[in-house]
Length: 209
Image (tube, rainbow, N blue to C red; front, side, top):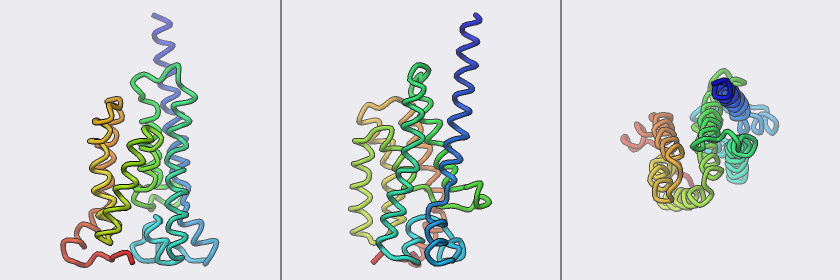
């Protein structure tokens, strides 16, 4: 009985540690810091007000769009990898990497360091999926690239890609926790794109050149 309670206590503590750590890492405002360092501007006062790569492109161009995307993907992947590595003895059903994944994308979209105004968690979300299952993550990155290239809308590529993520996780026989996470993440990221969806319906969404 004591051993069971001890394990539950350790599991709860580990979960809390991963949640807080992942949230703080996710809250690191990559796009904001880069734009601030290079131009002195506050990225939240430019374009859509997002700190993500698409808005960074409006200020710094295509090169920094890809740099911020890469950094945000790494930011998403690191807490997930660490959670799986450091808690392998307690990682029942793959729950700790999922906890880290959930909180890192919350941190990116609602960063404590910027008063809760961040990005839309696409790159960081794909980073978490790469860390959970690299095959699924790689396929999603390719799908995003193809859809965005042909439609010229980053938002369309992002929404469709994330909506496909739980299907691919299921097809690759990933743990149920990973499939559920991807479904929740897809809904969350779609919600964060609600203004983009409104602009798409009105034909007012900005295209990528």
